Image: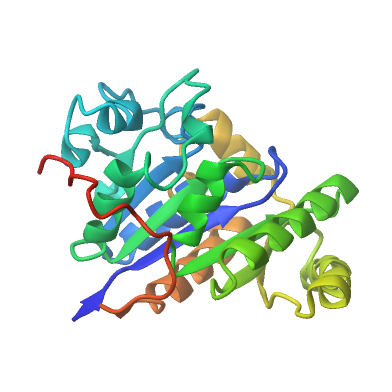
Length: 268
């Protein structure tokens, strides 16, 4: 049985464009005919719904608190994507570990049976919830910019994921690049450090260019692939969406965090 791909986008540092990338890739994939689910993995600070101009009635906090089922919290977004909104101002959620996140992880795994692509917008940093959600995925996209703090935090994220989920494939996306040559140079800077201290360098996946249209789409609360389909950033996002849709894998997945066997399943 073939399942949809389960992909997390992480960065270590906030403000590098993770949420924008996730939202746009989701809308682009849906435009290709895919069934897409987006999970706002910054559990205590809602972002995806704001970026897409959505107004949720329930959030992931309601799911984890047992107030509603996973499906009851989903809302419809552009081109028919489904969105699991994060809570706003819940300081406890980012500290949740696998046992506490079972009410989210179990239906997240099950969702790969009915969605072609499940995207998790990881929170900033390397807190327990961020690492747990990323470790549960088939692939982690590590988003980085040329900012030295972004590179430093990206390496820290690699280090943690290498320790906590050593079999998790991690690939690097570069944001705000001036072109392919610039993006590859940024990737190589990160790769040299990773190779020296971790023994391996994450592969390069692609880049998003500096694009005024992308920033304009954010102010409109729209995906750039809808607002400006001919923009350079839209072309790169569509290319990434097509790639991720090829990542659909078999029923048997790789390493995932162990859940307690006595943890009840969420209400369906």
